[in-house]
Image (cartoon, rainbow, N blue to C red; front, side, top):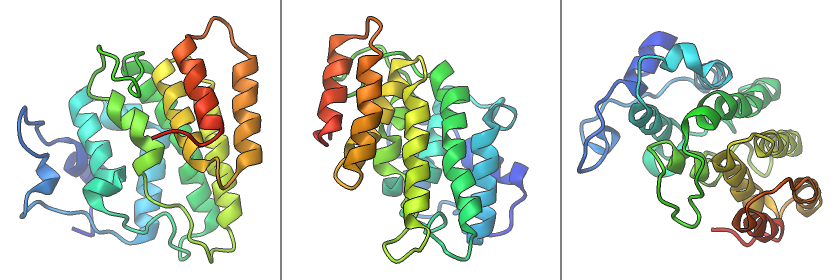
Length: 221
């Protein structure tokens, strides 16, 4: 499917039932698949991330988790190339990257359980794993030959920094997870961001501080 209105696209991605057993609907051999022009995809994703509550108000946590996995987890949908397509202006791709922080603030911060996934802490809900794994599994935002690569990557680092400031420890953990994977490429910015976080400790859990120190040197999985 390549021509869907925004509302039809939301319905397509999020309205499916979530099975108790078996694979998600998008792994079915005959599952409908969204294959738009890259500019349309970036526009729709940006709109969803920036203002998720009106679009997702009719769906439960499990449906939201499943839909976000379908759209953003490369293990589910593959890397479609939308975000690194140079036919889409860099400013539009940057707005999409920046809007991820809004999604975290309005969905994950409020609805993911405040537990830590890297230690398999019990009590999580359907949104915790998509939250924790977001920056590990999301598509690439720029290829090596993209002249705007550093600009887009810097925007991603700032987005993770914004998410790190959210109160929900599940969001903090997600940001640290992402920063840990970016530490090798951007050691200065990652170190600076995590040092600020660690020095602002106001009774933070020891296991979360330990994870932050591990992320600082790229020692995350």
